[in-house]
Length: 168
Image 1 (tube, helix red, strand yellow):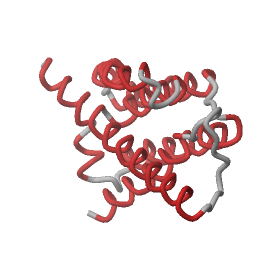
Image 2: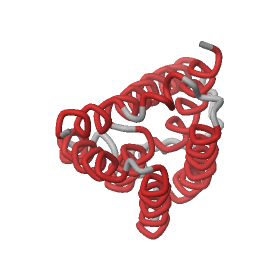
Image 3: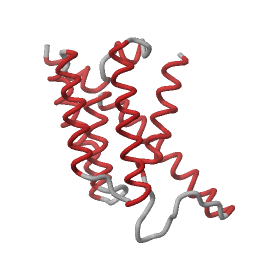
Image 4: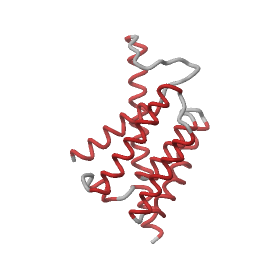
């Protein structure tokens, strides 16, 4: 029983990854895209994601997981995601709002899908910053004081991740 809960916390609900067109998976993905779109707009404009927005996302996804009967693994996923993402947060790779947003993702998807999305987002961010430096192209304001809005790239990574799952 405990190993099943830990596996679901790590890998997410297998039904979501195997069949992303089911109603349960669509509710999670569409809600996650809406949540991330608003978070990205905050992060793009203000370079912060409000605690109230992250809290509402956590409550929403934990509530959905209670409704789906996966609440124990969702709580474990939030804890494990927060633990795994704490070290980069302490080293200021991203801000605390991004860390809290990652825990919301953990509640929605599980730890490993969250890590894949975050890795892809950081890769996209690195590619973008390299292109900006090389070609002086800017659609986002970037300076050393405010940093880069990670949530914008998390939104792009989430869309790519969902598209890849849906096409498989």
